[in-house]
Amino acid sequence: MENSNTSTSSSREVNWLDLPSHLVYFISDKLLLHIKDYIRFGAVCHSWRSVYVENRHHPLPRQLPMLLLDDLDEPCLYDLSEKRVYNFSLEKSHRSTDYRTHSSTQGWLVIVYKKSVVYLHNPFLSSVKNKIELPHLPYFEHDGMISDNFLKKAVLSSNPASSSNYVVMAIYSQYHALAFYKRGDNAWTSLGSECKIISDVIYCKDQFYAVDYYGRLWACDVNSSHNKVSKLTPPIDEDNRSRYCIVESSGDLFCVRKFRIWIMENCYSTVEFKVFKLDTVKLKWFEIRDLGRQTLFLGDNTSLSLLASDYLGCKPNCIYFTEEYGSYGESDGRRYDMGVYNLEEGSIEVYRATESRRVFIPPIWIEPSLGVSE
Image 1 (cartoon, helix red, strand yellow):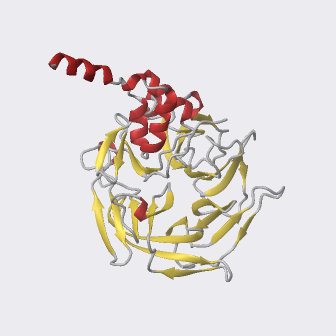
Image 2 (cartoon, one colour):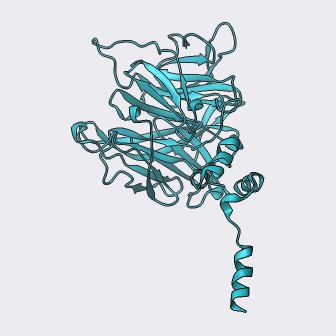
Image 3 (cartoon, rainbow, N blue to C red):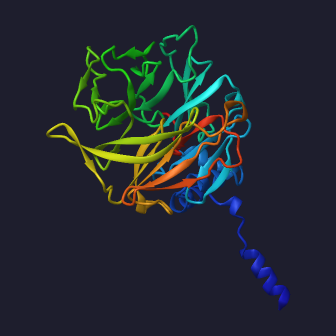
């Protein structure tokens, strides 16, 4: 009897590695919601990886942003929900000092090689289509040198993994001017000299918007033959330059002002934020003190908004932010802190994401994304 039961049990065993591909895809489609789980799923075996590769254009739910920490030797990702650091593989060449990651947009990293060659790279795609080289950006030399920060930020109008008609808008040069690149163009197009000292840029409702260091909002027209910019709002503070971020939240435009104090040479600490909402009728900013259920993620290279209840551990009515300058000297690497500002209480909770790491480049928010170009 014992042998009979053993035989029956063995005959009912199923080797999951031999499941038909349509069942494997069904499982992945229904059960895998986080990109970390999706990538692990594809690493189980060759057949499961084939399903992952063939179907990775299938959209995943929007992912909670992660912090990319780049210490050149071992880049890693900091997971907010788990408060855990994951080792993260970039192409070996990207870890050279000739390469610098400047920002992220729709899951793509904006990387500059030798201070002039710009390209997009999606590290979550194990494909030859995960890299897009862009034309050289025009730049202005300063005392015969090209600054590491000649490219401040770049944003996409759409994800190249799902759209072939994308536009890249960049803040570049020591003047913080604007230039854009349309897929298929041979060069970047400058938006002229009237719109400079740009602090942040965003793509929202089929339009690029920029905010300068006085809080003035500009609309950028990249579709007409004139390629013009138009000033939409008066300044928030015309007497003092400040760091502003612009972010879209539930269809509205918000401008966030960061207040900082210097605590030592080349090092400051963020102490407060003020949030302004655009009145689309009067074309003026007005201050708000409640984001409702929304959460903002702000950095000098990425700005985005999420519904807090959709993500485990995400705090509503708060601003997650990163510091641009670290607390140690450049030769020893820097420790860049990340904080969470509670808008209602006016308090800051500091996250020591880089406590034990020598990080040479400011942390970058990145929204993991999958997809392949058609």
